[in-house]
Image 1: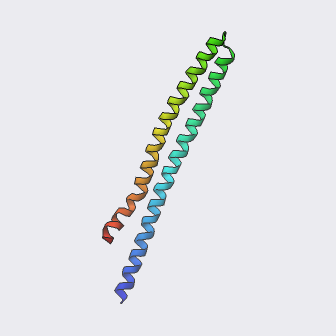
Image 2: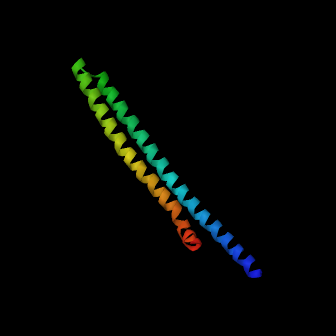
Length: 109
């Protein structure tokens, strides 16, 4: 009977430790995503500001359309690159947060 209580206590301790490791991985992943998002926002703002300055100094309407088209292309490509980066970070965060539970799940089988 005492062995059963000790087993339950050990299982509970292991589960809490595993949960804390998973939470640490989630926290680390969320921090990486926040840093990446902030850097992208800053870069996007700077690029938009530079494009606006070019647009305001355009000599002709045709030149203004060209500047706007170049900016739209750069913004789209930048967005796709950022979306790819963020999806990779989210996938890594999910994998890293599940990793501590792999041993618990294996034991339960």
